[in-house]
Length: 282
Ligand code: C2E
Ligand code: CA
Ligand code: CA
Ligand code: CA
Image (cartoon, rainbow, N blue to C red; front, top):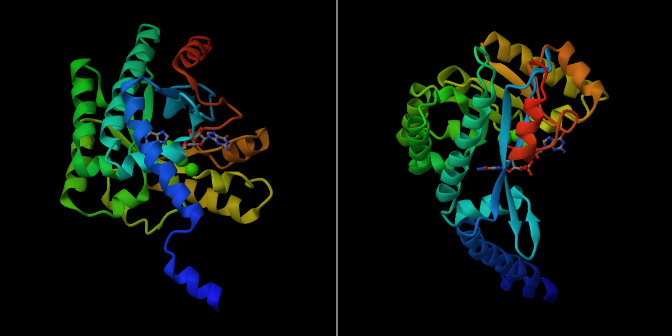
């Protein structure tokens, strides 16, 4: 009981204190990272499952810390959000992604009909302020690119946010031809009423349903149901985290439109990505 009493009054355990300090340090380092070019974008192809052709890729942020080496985005993005750095980082990501999609378009054979598209992750906070979205629209405009060459990956939480600023930003993007993909689909609230209300173009089925697709009948049932529902609503479907041929075959049988995962390619630097694209059979 004495032990319990003591714990109740020490709000921070040494482990918590250490974690808090690491976060503060990470935040400081992150500010420097943007200025000192430690950030880069990697690109992961999202092939069409029917034809295998690649006209879509996701941009994924990478940070190489001068001492710690690569820091995973799952670790530093939440810190960037907390410290209000996500707008500056998001704007940087948008500029880079637009530059890459411009290069990709330039590589397309003359008369090619398929539009190419890079999808970019956007945090809910970026919709509250809108400054990075402004940069995205300006950048597309400056390069005279159609909005359709960028799509934003958003999460369900954003769609449940009914503040007028969020709705207005989504409407503005939509008017500019920028599509939205609903990321990590199936893991959130799944109220799904927003699918009717909002202008969503693509559902990305979360990796957690794909992992045991070929062995767990309920994962298969959920995946098939999501695909069927999406198609009835006129939405396209991407399966995340496809690692095996068996998973791919299962997804093809379920009429899934696109796949993304290590089976096809890992996220890679821009040079490698553009080289891979250049080697694609016409
Ligand atoms: P996400 O948007 O769900 O991105 C997919 C994650 O799955 C990526 O992790 C990717 O590398 C990984 N992945 C792809 N294929 C496979 C596979 O076959 N198997 C497995 N096990 N994993 C696979 P990553 O790059 O570490 O990114 C983690 C998360 O960080 C992203 O999850 C996204 O939420 C966030 N993030 C990344 N870049 C950005 C960014 O520019 N802005 C924002 N706001 N968030 C970002
Ligand atoms: Ca994503
Ligand atoms: Ca995802
Ligand atoms: Ca995920």
